[in-house]
Length: 150
Length: 150
DNA sequence: TATATTTGTATCGCGAACGATATAAACAAA
DNA sequence: TTTGTTTATATCGTTCGCGATACAAATATA
Image (cartoon, rainbow over all chains, first blue to last red; front, side):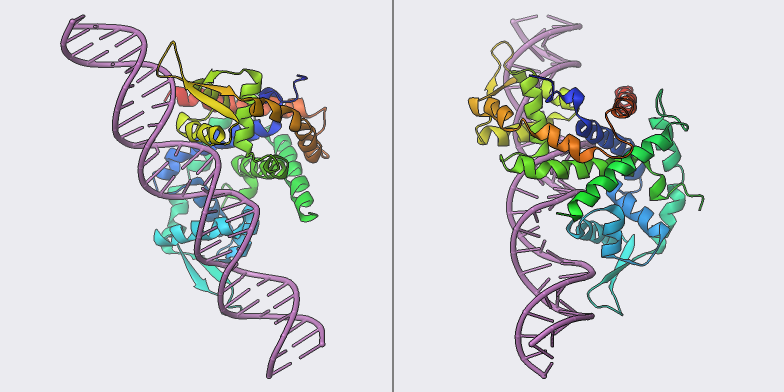
């Protein structure tokens, strides 16, 4: 009973909750266009660089391909992107945005700002966010490193 | 193309990734005892206060009852807890730890420390963690407040 | 007391996450 | 060339997470 199991002392519980709640804040904005948050992440990855193999997208989002493949298939079914076997390497599936997928960028222009505003508060401001980013990036790098050594 | 859609600028993507990776760090430690991370959260809630109705557990974890109910049923099937209809209010299901559920606390004593160590890095130290907690708590409070006004 | 509303929990369906496993293409070694 | 290994994706099964909905018990109102 030394408080080591208290929820209030847990970093992970905070990250888990904050992540869920922000995703919920995205929900109405994305659902309007038939998108989920992970699908929005895929779009951002492809807006940054179109025509990527599944593996590159998975690595960019730090997800496994067995998460990404079904995600991409659903988006393909929605006409947001295409999945075509690579010419150079027939094992790869090259993912490309359709016109619809490209067009979604304009329709979602207001989303980042809206969510950004929703999150701003006492201790989270344009001044403090960079520090928060540094800590989260460090945690991510740290844990990514550990699992590669495993 | 002003960078507003760049993954590298997204707070939510960082929280989402950090949360997933820490949960993955818990995985081997918990799976050893047949537990998942959300189940571990339920245990912590009940170790803090046993004999709670479903709703209180859900509120404590900031989850919906439709997430918690099946979770509790699985844990009941594992013999970790019991779900018994409330006497005072027959709508409530009172959740109580079994001896097995109580005993898990001793078996998991090393978990918080192990995960704590795994997360420590350059910018995340015993000195900086309180500040990180403040920011995450603020974000959570902020978003919780907004959804109540909706 | 009868009726309406609220509250606590559960059910259903879908989309992630992810461990484990399978499969085919590419590549390396014998 | 044959065989073995690695690599890129996909399939399968289980557990969340959550919106929508259902239902019975409790409470409020008429």
